Amino acid sequence: MSVQVTPLSDAIGAEISGVDLTEAMDDDVAETVHAAWLAHKIILFRGTSLSADDQTRFARSFGDIQPIRSATHILGEDQQFMHVSNRVVDGKPGILPEGEMQFHNDQSYYERPAKATILNAIEIPDQGGNTLFLNTAKAYAALAPDLKAQLVGLRVLNIYDYDTNPTIKGEGIRADAPQFEHPVVIRHPDTGEQALFVSRLMSDHITGMERGASDALLSELFDHMEQPQFIFEHSWRPGDLLMWDNFASQHARTDFDPGQTRILRRVAVAGSRPEAAP
Image (cartoon, rainbow, N blue to C red; front, side, top):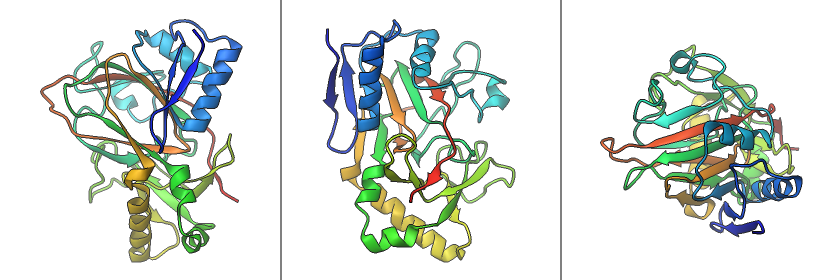
């Protein structure tokens, strides 16, 4: 079967069929898949039945595995994958078990965020627990010219308080929570596209700007980015494998019944420090 790439929405995403992920991809298939990922920001494979080794092998075709960083106090050091789960898996508690989760780029509170994240759905609730994907490059392109000009040279402090506010930003943020300053608008390392790199969950303030003005500007950007025309909502099925471009997209999660099981295996690809857009 030849590789087929079918867009998921006008906003973002494509489904790929005709690829057996239980085997290593040959060079031509890998090139097609990589090009589709860069073009569509997220790629989806349906009906997979993958081991953790299969998933990490697929991830390595895009770069080095990023060991788990935020949950080492739960999982230990040098773990290549974790389970986003509301159940114990392999004797370890799941991470980010329940509830709605606001839009964010993964690991934007580190100097080098993940380049890509790959989730494989193992068990899914009957309703809810969907993932929303936001095209941050398309959202930036749609900004008014005067607002684009206002963003030139601005930087944002991203903070993730994993212990206190793991899914919804709250009032209290620990001083020692992981944090890093990045450009508000970044240049994609592969495509050269300009993309917004602020998020409702993790962006605390624009550095060097009075707090009220910073809050107002960030709120304006969040409201703009989260308009329906930039978003695709993915309803998970068991066996789905979905990979997103962390420098050109954000994601969020809808709520679901905590009495139902939700287990997905997560692997990340190591990234570079985001550069400011020219």
